Amino acid sequence: MYKNILVPIDGSATSNLALKEAITLAQVNGSIVKVIYVLDPFSITPDIEYFTMQDIVQSMRTEGVVILEKARKKLLAAGIHFDVKMVEVNTSGERIPEAIAMEAKRWPANLIVVGTHGRKGFSHFLLGSVAESIIRIATKPVLLIRGKGR
Image (cartoon, rainbow, N blue to C red; front, top):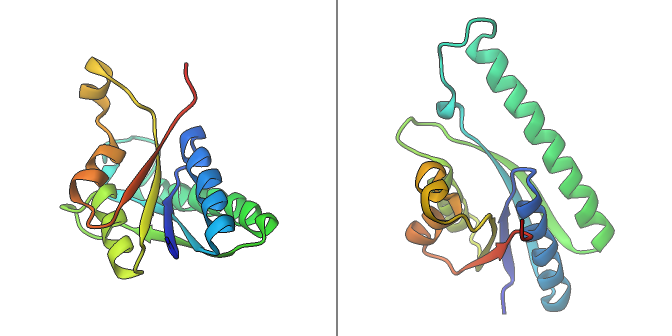
């Protein structure tokens, strides 16, 4: 059914739940899972006194490597075919949801599995939703995995 499953992760509990669900789907369907971490250096506020932009981007990149390595270990333990990749946003107009949708097209994924916090009301207004943006722009089916209740 879904042979290529893309899972964007950020190290959060909800993205870990999405990875767990993708692994289950892959085991049942014999799918390949591709896990991505999106690095968006354009989301950084540039006027931080004690750190250079390069220091902050390198820190984000290091965090991404650690997050992807944890995912790689889970995928190896599950015994499925997989790939892990860091995707970097290269232009200031592009954002994380666009990078995820482009990677899904480029690979090509049959399904995107993404975790969502399920925020409502004012907190959703303030924080937005990467998952919601992916749904709006992706040309592939999207499976949302809801985070654990608060």
